[in-house]
Image (cartoon, rainbow, N blue to C red):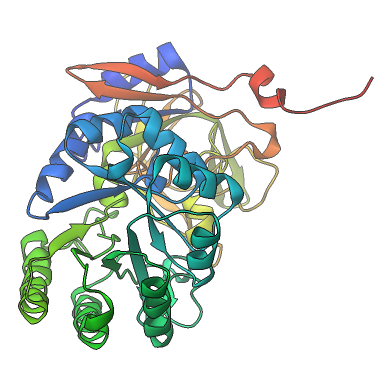
Length: 416
């Protein structure tokens, strides 16, 4: 089996599927703990829980000293349920809905402002909490256009040219701005890193008089992993930290007081910790093309269909016998959608993948799915959400049950 770093093996996966069914999300807690340790240089590690928000995982991260970011009312509730104190939660968004505003007020949760209107909405609601301000520096970057979070085509943050007006308004309304946040997209490289570091320094230098209470520089998240396991794209974390830390020291010296450095990882902490185990339910040819049809669809893992994202795929034969014979295969799911294909590139281009000869009943494993995997699952085609299990101390424990048909229909109303 292509193990990638997880501690469990093919036998453990087969037993878990036998107990909990397929498809099934399998997480390795040890990988998450290792990734947290890798970022120990930073003053604050704030987990972007949208990557994988299971409250069991959130609780384990809290125990490891990680703080948390929430981008919705539901994520605030999750963080509280996982045991986070309100002062260790930050709400980051470009708007407030009524539920989020109410929770921010009830628990005095810090807010990362992404739109000027949020200031007045806080003030009019009688809320006075410490603020972060997310700055759109006018440029962005990302492994896909759908994860680019900077520039004129991005909805995220305060446009750099409007920042002074927003900070003056915050000061006028009595808000304390304790953090400036700048994140341009997932998968940034060193060229874009140098650009955003320079933009942060120039921005703070320009507005220094308007942020006397600044305590934190947030470098955002977007730390890449090597999905193809070729080593390409992976950041040298020490180099990454040193670039930001040097900038932090220059800014601190210019401001005349100490600043903390905060990082906001999502994918980096969880992606490599998880495998999606599925069962092959059909092997068939369409002309010259071979298909493996599995019991998971983009309702489970949407990244290939949405981004054209690559995930390594491996086969585990039920009889335990490996074969050296390989096929060029298209891997697809059960949905009534032509786009329900796991071997596709950005733009929906379907490609084949060289995989071992397999049969109905064999397990097909999709690797590195711990970020934006289960978190983006849906009930499209009225499919049930798959269970999640966590590998810890040599065994799997269920951390989310498989959804039932009764739960699927529980909020719907039919007048008789």
